[in-house]
Image (cartoon, rainbow, N blue to C red; front, top):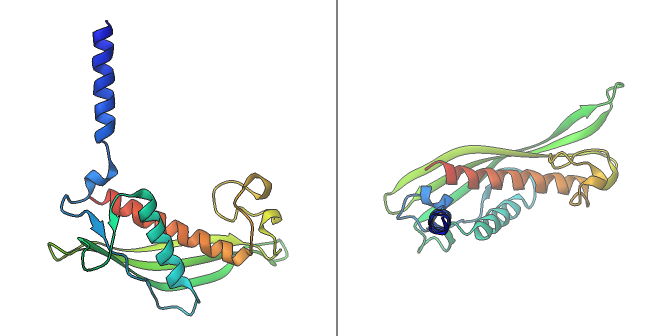
Amino acid sequence: MKLIILVFQLIFISSCSYYSLAGSIPPHINSIAIPIVENQTAEFGMSESVTDNILSKFNEENILRVTDEESATSILTGTITRVTDAPYTFTKQEAVTEYRFTVHMNIEWFDKKNEKVLLKKNFSGWGAYGLSGDISSDGIDNDGDGLIDGEDDNEFGDPREFATSVAVNKITEDVLNEIMTSW
């Protein structure tokens, strides 16, 4: 009986150690270059914000080694094509109570060895903000996580800047998920 339990434990441990999302990426791709994202909008600082966020997420997940374009086996390029900042919710008297900040972006992931595009897709992400000036007490779920104000420990700071950050984070997560699941 102890032998059977030991065998099951070894099978379980060994199967877990080989499980990896990176297994779905073509085997010859082990690194990625992420040049600064192009910004075709008038929104100041978006290129840097999006690029830094994508770089941080790839480094954090450690699925592909982030390196320079010359030594990378793949390149991820992005272009911010549009930013919208529009009314989202209204009172009964039709006064705006909440805005939605949305970032639209094109992404292309290129395989340098086979000289082909692995992924080409449009992404968008959004964040909500009110006009109160204090997102920690505005009654809005600013980051779409189902938590409001005191329940949400990351809702603080300038409302529009926070909404911008949330939009960029959503795009970054979607890009990483798409790369991991498209193969």
